[in-house]
Length: 129
Image (cartoon, rainbow, N blue to C red):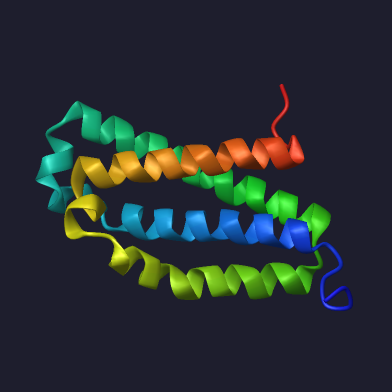
C-alpha cells in the first residue's frame, strides 16, 4: 500500500470528505432551480438553510482539495474523488424520500457538512483566523 499511497490515514480522511461533499451535492442539486421548489421559495428558513448548505459545501470542497493536495499524491486525489462521485448516488438513494427533499434533507446535509468541516479543521487546521 505504501507504494500506491504512503499516507493511508490522509487518504481515508479525504475519502470521507469527498463522500460527504458528493452526497451533499446531490441533495442540493435537487433543490434547484428554485422556481420548481415553492416549498423552499416561500419559506425564509428554507432559503437560509439552502444558502448555508451551499456555502458550507463550497468550503468543504475547497478545504478538502487543499488538504488532499497537501497530503496525497495527485493520482490518489483523482481516484478517490472519482469513486466518491461515482458511488454518491447510491448513498443518496438509500435515504428515505422525506429525508432527501425539503427542510429535513437540508437540515441533515447541514449537519453532515458541518461535522465534516469540523473534522477537516481538527485533522488539518486548514482554516485559521
